[in-house]
Image (cartoon, rainbow, N blue to C red; front, side, top):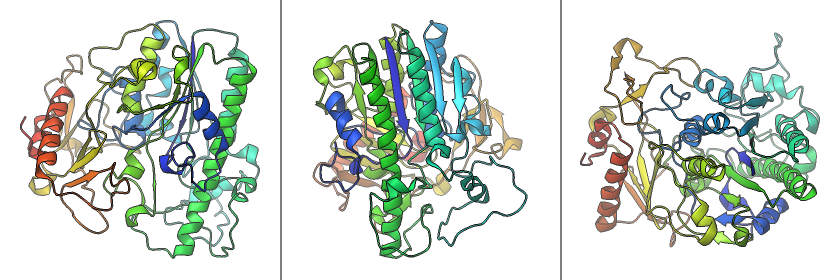
Length: 488
């Protein structure tokens, strides 16, 4: 058996044809995928954002209650490592440059082999002393290394996504006749900046003549409607490039007749606000549906009847894929893994959970049962107490602060008897651009755009009770219960 996992970053569910037949986004290969795979309609994030989601993927459990962005820990399970140790060949192709920063440096070494293609976002890749030529733009997050890198990305074959997918295709071509391997083909796109080739931008005709806008800031919308539409067009063009890359993978599976013995997973870590709720991006606002409710597709050769179907059971791909992959390759999940094997859902849509929690470290903690989404904020002054628990005190870039105040904590159930460092943390509480700043409750079946928060104490209390139970299952620190006003 073999498995190909195609992972995109910041891919919006509601803009893809299988989820929105009326979408204006050109993505025929996602429609083609939905004809071959099961389309999951109730798929949610877990730990946010990029590297916390990938730690979930390796460990099969939520990590946002204990730590923010950071590397794999010495006590962590790693599904790719477990597969490798049991004789399954694992390979990573990626242009997700956060893997090679301080807060991600322990992930890629868990694979048998790996390939990395540089130049995304603000990756300090090309060395250039002279200032680059920067076009007229309104990119609030534009960074000097990005403008340097773009000078060397004039052709489509120069773009990191193209190089990454080409590498993944080479791996498939070279190993299609071999058995017992896992390929993680991971594209940073359509994460911002929304840079693509002219043939994809031409899919979205526009008479816009203003300054370049392909990198929105993380905050409230302040641009003109015309500028906002330009950013959306640039995002859509990048989604269309991702769709083209997906088509290359589907073509290879057809050509090599791999559908009989190869699982195909297509997923993302989270979505991205493109002006909805008055905001751009993620991290700072509440985890609205556009961010938290994700696209997810699976073809499992053991369940051919699922081809072209939808699956409505509540799933969290970033924690569920680990146990699913282990069992697919004949291994068993560890006792600390809280994700669920998706084989039963693929077979007959049997549910694996009644609720799921998700969030950022030190921010709101959120829960959904598939119909309601409840976003619970801190009850304590200054959002305290709050700590991160780690033996790897690195942040995205550099090191976690307040290291002079570090203490040793007692082991958690999943730390293999190791005492982690307890480091003071502040967190950051998300707030809507307008409206209620406290708890938020939505019926996302009746109100999928989350326009009107509900005032229903019975539903809120039911979900808060279930949230506390799930926190206990995660062995969450006692301070999280205090911070959220939940019984420990």
